Structure formats: structure tokens, C-alpha cells
Length: 242
Image 1 (cartoon, rainbow, N blue to C red):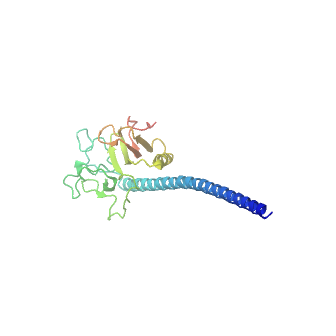
Image 2 (cartoon, one colour; image 1 turned 135 degrees about the vertical axis):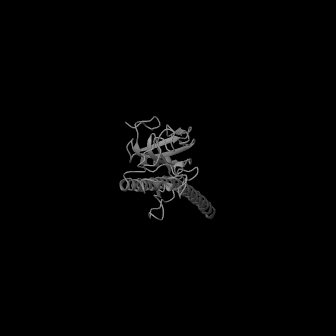
Image 3 (cartoon, rainbow, N blue to C red; image 1 turned 90 degrees about the horizontal axis):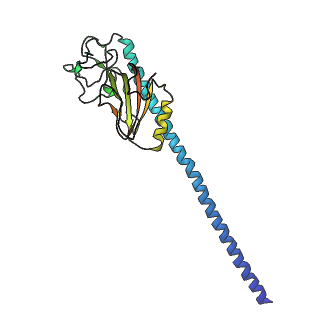
């Protein structure tokens, strides 16, 4: 009798141990499933937050650049009458009411000479100020109280074009973060085809100006371009402006 009861208890103990082990394994599996479940939305949420931040920063800088240039154009509507826009001139086809390339040889001999090899937006000057000489005042400087902030992380400095195709500025990135393409498309949705271009040059360089082969969206990059004004529908529009 005693031996039978002991054997029964032994079997019961083994059964309870087996049941406990099963519960532990189930708990581990559930914990792993919950971890995966919570990690995935967190990653997606981070990408969404990064994309929203990027769109906000780019859009804010676009608005600041456009408003600053438009203020200059409205204030000095006569432009700079000394700029040579003839085919053989310093700035062929340029619109003299808008800033020209800050690296233009037009500024040779001026107090602030040309920014060698650079066409950065942060260096553009206000034409028509004074309007009949090369001594143009920088739009973004201590004297105007306007300072262009650094470009968003992962992006290059904004660059400037004023020529045969019109007037535009652009930035680029060669980074491959997943949210960048989505962010650029969302940014593009804020503009019409005649205002902004999201340019995909990941498969090869894309020309952006019909009169200057050096102005491209670099190979392996994605660019965003904003037009101040257009001159017709050059083939470098992506897509063409109607």
C-alpha cells in the first residue's frame, strides 16, 4: 500500500514537472512573438518620423529661399542692368532680375568677387542692389539679417541656376535610407509639375540644364529641384512643364 502510494506520487510529480516545462516553453514562445510584434511597428514608426522630419525641413528651407529671393526681386524690380546675358557674355540667357551664379565672372573686380567653383544658394546676391554696378549685396548675410541654415542631414547644400532654362535651385543626396524616396515623393506632392521636380539619378546622372552640362543630378543620387521661373519647356524638365 505504501509502495503503491509512493509510486503514484512519483508519477504525479513527473507529470507536474512536465506540465510546468510546457508552460515555460509556451511563455518563451509568446514572449518572442510579442517582441517581434512590437519591434516591427517601432521600426516603421521611426522611418515615418524620419520621413516627416525630412519633408518638414526641406519644405521649410524651400519656403525661406523662395521668399528671400522674391523679396529681393520685389524690392529691386529693375534688376542688374550691367549683367551681360548675350550668348558670349558672362551669364548667357540669365534673367537679370534674379540672382545669377555667385561664381559668375560678372563679379570680377567687385569688392566681393566670384565664389570660385561654387554656385551655392548661401552665396547668391541681390541684383538691382544698387542695380548699375557689380557691387551686389549677399541675400544671406549679417547685413540683411537672413541666414540660410545648413541643409537637412544626408543632403548637400542648395545650389543655384539662372540661365536659358529659367531660374531654379536644388539639393541632392546619395544616401539609400529607406525613407528618403518616400519623403521626396511626399515633398513633390506639395508642388505642381512646374514648381518642383523629384529627380531619380540612382541609375545614372541626369542633366538639369540644357545650356550647362555640368549641372546634373549626380549618378547614384536623388535630387529635389525647385523652380523660381521657367523659360519655355526645355527637355531637362522632369517631367516637362506644360
